[in-house]
Image (cartoon, rainbow, N blue to C red):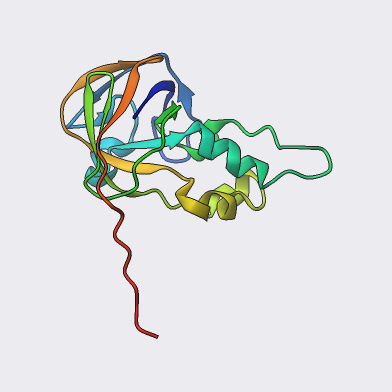
Length: 163
């Protein structure tokens, strides 16, 4: 299963606007260079979002004037991928250009999404449309257009409670 990298974004500090870039250095020590979260949160050094999942979430917000024109960076993910379904299982492995990533979990949207647009939090929470969080397995430079491939996609474990 392969796709491609269509967006790279970072932010220098909490609540800062996202900065879109064409290339980015990714490391095990800091995640995406220039993004404040990578070094601070070791289990979510990099966040990935699927363009298809983002656009589906926006369709849920459609009203009389159509689909709201919200940029993907409002989700505050580092990498936007296209043409590939992101694996949701913990331990899944992906390669983005030369960089290997390991999925640590699904990205659950926070209440800030409803600050962007009412209902966006709910739209992203459905079917894990908010993307995935990852740790970095090896350092490297990513560029727009890089190939994205799923190397290992374990089954998603669900816990069923009695009752």
